[in-house]
Each structure stands twice: as C-alpha cells, then as structure tokens.
Image (cartoon, rainbow, N blue to C red; front, side, top):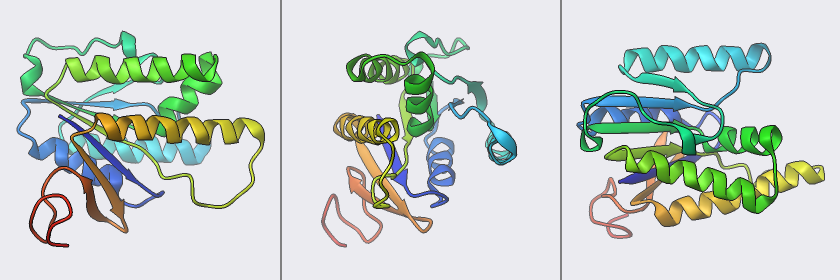
Length: 189
C-alpha cells in the first residue's frame, strides 16, 4: 500500500504520517529521512524529527538521493515492514540540485526510487509538501523545481492507494481509506 500525505508547512503532516506507520501493524518501521541539514534552522528541524523517530521506534536511514539503490537492512519479509519517506520535496531538491540532469532523468530516478522502496515493504508512506499556492514569482530554477514536484506529486497520487491532505493538523482523506465522518471516498462529509 502507498499512502501519500501532503500539506502546507508545519501542518502536522509528519506527525500524521508517523502515526500511520506506528499503527499499521508492521514489525519493523523504517524512516527514510531525505532532508540535508543546512544552517541552524535546518539542524534544529532534523533534531526535532530525530527525537520524534526515537519515540516512535523507527530505524532511521538518512538517504538524500538515489533511493533506487537503497536496500533496507534486516531479514524480515517485506510484508512485515513499513517505510516512511520524509519527504518528497527534500528528495527532489537533492536530486535536482545535487546530481542534476534533465527533467526526465530526475523524474525517472525519483520514480525508480519510490518503486524500489515499495517492493521492500508492505506500507510505504510518503510525505510531500504543498508549495504551489503562494503566488510568488520565482527564478527559473525554482519554478522548474516547483513544476517537477507538482508532476511527481501527481504521479504519486496516481500510484497511491490513499492520499491525505493535513490541514491545520486535521487529516482530510482525498483518495482511498475511510473518511472521518463515515463512508468511503466522498460519502458522508
């Protein structure tokens, strides 16, 4: 199962994704952390997430790019694992501004990495960001990044069994799963 969790900055999407991973029944939970810590603010965010992972009993793998080459440690079968990827926007930035390449090369690397992780787990939970609605005018390379993230998010939503947007700490299921007020997709809310 692939679950995509999206939302704005500090919306509570990471805490929600971690809760999904903890409650999914996996014997081993992996936390693939893609954020490279830059500056004091970045270091503080990474440390905050490390504390949260320790409390949730995750096996942390800090992997900034090339997920298609990642082999999860351990011997348990894939059906007893959960993987939380935090987060797509950091992974894409690392791929685009690190190794680089054409849009197609970057998309293919990221997609191959997601499919590689999916083969190794029962539940793959992916956190991404909503970065498209601020109305700002950015330089061409940032606009390229935003466009690529939008394309990857659309591809991920198509691959996902469930898509949830976290708004002010409230998870709103967009695709799959049961909605809080009852019913399946579109019923009851």
